[in-house]
Image (cartoon, rainbow, N blue to C red; front, side, top):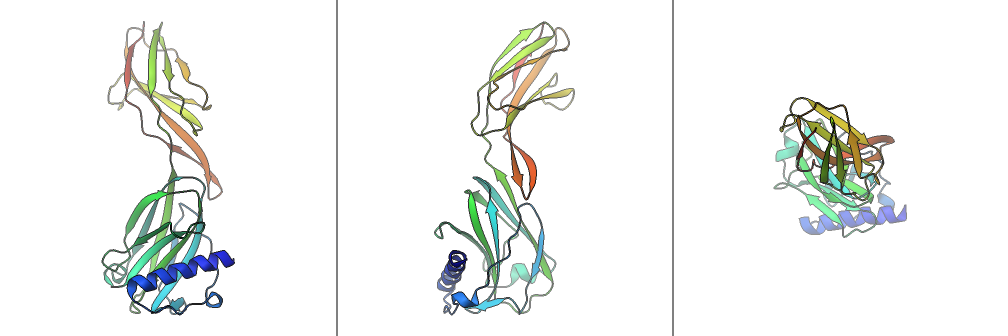
Length: 246
């Protein structure tokens, strides 16, 4: 808790320096923030009951990132003052390393969307605003997606009404999806095979049409637990290769 309070104070101090205000917060005045989940919407709003330091009202939250990846913070509000009022901002700070900080403000307003790479760890999310005319609530959500290593096909071996696909092993993934179709744009006649072991690097596809050309591509996937639920994330598709079966 002392570490968390220390980081909250560092955010207040940095914002005070950048805004030219005088810091007056103390550890006793900072409350431990509530924890929020990734990929879940929350409703908050300006309140005179919020922490008030350095001429700014503060809303603090903490969240955890399960592994390296990318986050997207989305903010929406019915009251346009949240976007046009001066001296409002949002800050995300690592609890392990207070130098790892993202400060977002668009001409002194809270941005509607902000994205960046992020490392595994615990973080503090802070909304700060000084305009007491704000009315109503705003909704925010932090969406997260892990880094999923891409793979590529190395060879397609044709067989009788079949083919064997081979590919490069990708590190840190859960498995792969192989997609094949007679349509080079993969818009129709599309089939998908799932390989559930990351160490597997080949797959035999059977019961195809003799003499047909097939377009084949592959992508990796990773399954991780987000907010208590397993969710599957994908890499980009590889370049397609073609094979004409016997």
